[in-house]
Length: 112
Image: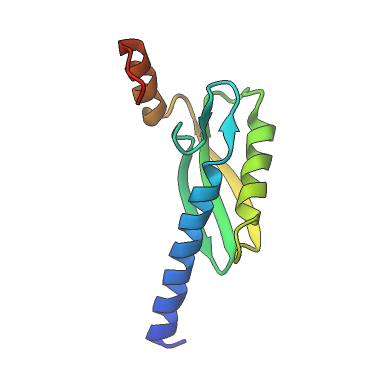
């Protein structure tokens, strides 16, 4: 593989990653009314040769929505052209910093 092919492939993977991220904004957590990206549940997305690995957090190991959220994430990611396979990995539990910030803003009366 030539250097220009590697650069083109890398660029293509980055474009697919951004498209996946955009689609994941459509996955809502019904308990908090935010999408999984804004809530900070999506920690990382890796795309290589059409294989997407999405790393996410859950608030608790016993999250009743874990199956629903992971399946919705897989479905949205698979809908992106160029994505062949999707794996969702849970990489931690707790309240993501992004969600903590939103909660603090709401407590202060903000709506951002």
